[in-house]
Image 1 (cartoon, rainbow, N blue to C red):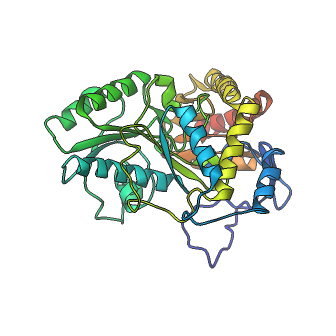
Image 2 (cartoon, rainbow, N blue to C red):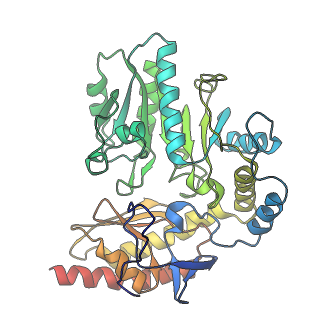
Image 3 (tube, rainbow, N blue to C red):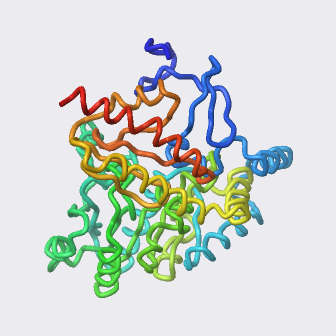
Length: 399
């Protein structure tokens, strides 16, 4: 792999790209323009649920493109109601707003919370958010995000957020005590960009009870950890709770841009005509991608596969890495896994790519794997065989 940076004179320099141009893919593998093959353990950052060129998805999308790609939301699209009903059935919630990305879904959730507060007579609503959280890069979602690095240079940030540490129920009680302006608690069931940090099941149940006791909305960001990635449809379901508001995106369309906000009875009727909208949300192509993704996931047993193959992969990584000096923890659920080292390890992204493995490093020192949910046990073993020696070599040279 060449180390020369690709030249993109007309593209804004907003990404630290690898010197790779991908050409095509099949299943969990992709090939670059030079013919080099890679095992994809990144899945477009938890987007390519069904892998690449899935034989059931491709013809369905081709058929849809031949009918309608986009219509205005001035008109009904029956498939939008179909997909909304499927999401409500699998979440136990009531209504859905469709958009095009996770940022938009999270932005809509924040607007729901503020209007919920205003409807109760609260002039300056406040929302509890978390350290290390990542909810997007718009000004509002950036303000909710708990990463000073990505916030730097974009102040003044939006007010109205109370930040607390993860998995500490006393901290949230203290931070909100006597504050009549609190309207919602907003967290990722498993933090993604923040370093693959799961919320404890007991903690999620405690926050649900706290929200109920105070008439707050519980809003759970399932943008990265939802859509079957952990072995259940949504990661919070491991705690046996339901949120009031649930943003989704990434894996919902298997690569076609789509986002959604799913709401329960407390939040489902907050928005009325004119309160919120989007040009592309719920368009025929994106909705068809969502419908086919869910149908194929169920036909092919991909929730079970994510749970089983994810557990196999996690166990293998723990077996080979725990006890190695410099490895702090292997954590996550299903096919959303992180390996935290005790030092920055961004160089491993390039080294893994050179070895034919695509993944990412997030929060400076966490190796993140969010592969397609079709990953096989043999491919999981291949990830371990490629990755573990590179981690050990990296740590040895840093010793």
